[in-house]
Picture 1 (cartoon, rainbow, N blue to C red):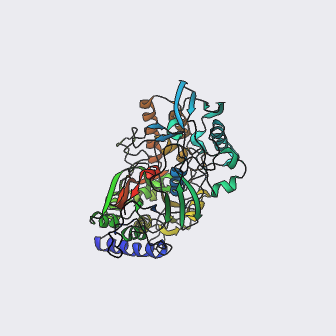
Picture 2 (picture 1 turned 90 degrees about the vertical axis):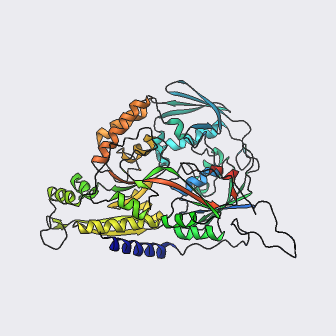
Picture 3 (picture 1 turned 180 degrees about the vertical axis):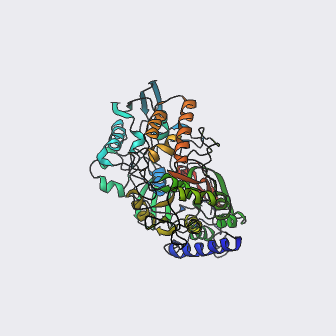
Length: 538
């Protein structure tokens, strides 16, 4: 594509995305904000000093549920960060740190014993005990409960209460990534068992903040848990504002209506805030990737040569440079660069329209009608690219890819819907090629097992390769990190060669906030747990 035409496409795409998503946000009604403007003096008195009693965070999508066992979206994870505690907490180096478990021991490869913290209570005042831990994991492993990430915990054979402060996990086989997954929020058995539906909207945890109100698609309000075992949060109130459009969210930051925003963000907004001395921008390598998911149940896409041809039409460097301004880097495979298993030699398919054409022909797709559209057996090569409206970068990307696919003879269409609809369509296989991402990839298992294991609910495209299933199980069972690295590299090569996913970008993580906000520490996982240590100076 010529540079002039490409820029025009970006401009149109951005205007479309803003029109679709930019009207749902309303500024907070309160006149006091956590922004950079000082309070005006009154009758000659100096401006007040101190800290704001409310911390305001701008997020892109609303939560689907508040139950940590059922959450599958980023905002639900951000709620879990502050409302719940897990047995462990992952440090910014992804090391397991004590949380509800004070310590643990691993007497043999399939046994883990956790000693629980004493004197901890849930937000309703009930005591936290080993029974709550057992209930949380028993329900998670119950097939009828349909927890989206249950496969991560499948190697757990049983959870036993030794006494009120001790719980024992017995595994079916050695399971290397277990500790990394035990940051799952522990729920109170008494409430979650009694009325699971009510609990999903009214969460009760042991964390630093209590949720007090959920105005769906608008805001989520919290107040500090004064009895928090780790000490009360520094700011008494916390509010998450749901602002779908990236630029509108940044405008709210500039206006002082919110105090902090973070990824996803638009490159032009990051550059704008960087140039404003009133704000701080923190950038780090993220634990996620953005990918094209191919629905292999689609007869056209069930052909690996078609998927390979399409992969040759994805100019990842141009997408990274021009759409993401280098914020996210060109992707290669499901192994992200921060991972100890990363292998830079697994590169995927280069941008090569000539090779794409040859592969389409090998698969039997030709322009027999001379109308610019490839066809086979009287059927046009028609495919729809889909993504969600909350991320204009992704909307621009699918429109850019639509143009690339069309030039290659694909009857390419675009569908953009709000996240709840998009997510439901993914789970129901109501898509052809979808652009989305995975976050919190703390272990190669997290980046690959749920995505490519043939029976996983998160294997949206229903990719099925028995060899991959076998390798994924092997990677989980080995306690030798070098062996695990070799296993995951083999999986990554297979799924990349077969284009189960086309990893377009390795995600960066960016947080932006006003300079009068102190105490924030970015986390590669995007965790907001440390909001408990944040203050906003008046």
